[in-house]
Image (cartoon, rainbow, N blue to C red; front, side, top):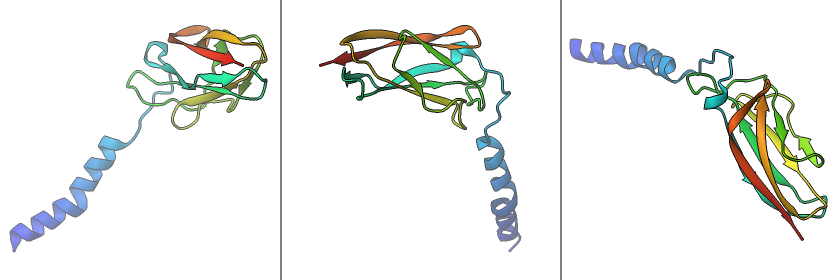
Length: 127
C-alpha cells in the first residue's frame, strides 16, 4: 500500500513538474547569429511577378531556443521582396515571399542587426 501511495505521489506531483521544467522554452532574448539559420521553403518560381519563392529566417539564442519579437532583413534582391511578418514569431521565424519578372538566380542572405547569418540560399525564377 505504501508503495502505491509513493508511486501515485511521484506520478501526480514530481514527474509532471520535471517534465514542464525540461520542456519549457527559455530564451534569453539575445539572438546568436551563428546559431540562427536561413531556409528556403520554396526556391523555384515562375518569373511572372506573381509566383513566389518563400524564404524563412529562424532567429535563435545561445541555447538554440527561438527568439521572438526581432526583425531581420534579406539581401540579394533589390525588388520583389515582401516580408510576411515584421517580427519573429514564437518559433523565431520571419518569412519572406520573393517575386520577379526577370528570369534568373539570386543569392539570398539574411542580416540581423547588421550581422550576416552564415547561410545563403539561391532562389530561381524562370519562364
